[in-house]
Image 1 (cartoon, rainbow, N blue to C red):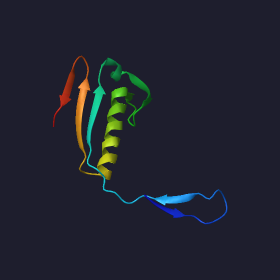
Image 2: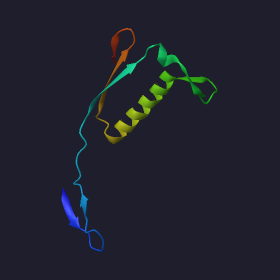
Image 3: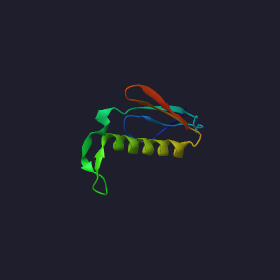
Image 4: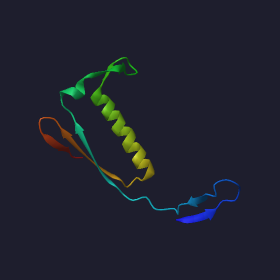
Length: 92
């Protein structure tokens, strides 16, 4: 970390800059609980007026998360597992 002195009046703090670093490749495991409670309808409806379930909301959140992570580093890897009556891996 490199520190630089900031001139002026005040508390005399210093600004710092971080050296650029390469983003590390990440292995990310998403574990989703898909029991009956995940099929409960939420108060909001979708764009076509269809009720949105908790699972629909979870799916959308996962897609946004994966898109953001792959935008930062396209070499991230993802694995998915689901839990209902038993645990299972989603392989693709």
